[in-house]
Image (cartoon, rainbow over all chains, first blue to last red; front, side, top):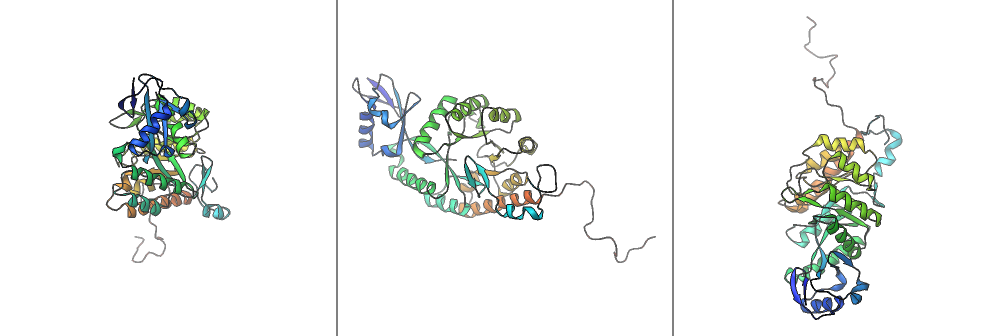
Length: 70
Length: 287
């Protein structure tokens, strides 16, 4: 099935857990998950819930980190 | 406010000296001495940013959240996160923003994410209504502020100088207002001093911070002379020729404006009035 990760389409298996997807993306891209926060479909997901969240077709996942700002 | 005037303009009397020397203000549960809130964006380098913040002697810096990106320089992200953690742990405060949000829902979610990442209940609430002027959307702003306050946030709302909007923000529980001086990044200064002055007069006990549009230290001094409690700016320092020196210039202007406010500026007069005594004027004849 297709999900959207940080604006980009991504193919994952049915029943994929959010925690697995984030760990894979962190390993692939060097993200530090301890310094990141996540929302799915515009709803904040606490870290303790990553392993319980089963992704669905079309889910939009945002993984955000600290940046400079005014 | 102490002093011999009966409006918001104050002046020193002997009993107030100690209080004036300890000129702190309370905001969001913190007691601050610096009235200069500074942004962390657009500096030539991370070192310039850190040295400018040091030069400003700011106790509050604004920060933001953006997508993790492999192309965005992971090392820079890590270094910035280390910097803000060290900044926060030394009696200084982070003020995360919701820059780029266009709806209450986006701003609320971003605020919750910022609270989790930065371990603070403070949020600079921005909900943009117009991309050309970056003018806030007042309706979405009030809706977001109301929800965030119910969830325990100290909301610092970036708003216009509209009196009714500010009243609405206070009515939903905001304890702070941050009206713009001019659109973000324009450097035009205080475009509507009358409206800003009206806010100061109508809300004498609400911390008021001019946020956005300030271009020069004299603009910041003007806001402080009017009795604003603090100033928040970024571009005017970061995009100057020498951000470290400009940060100090703003610090001094803000301190100067604050002292002028406390001292009580004279009233404007239309008629000239000689300051040197008339009595004893040489070469003067009574005919």
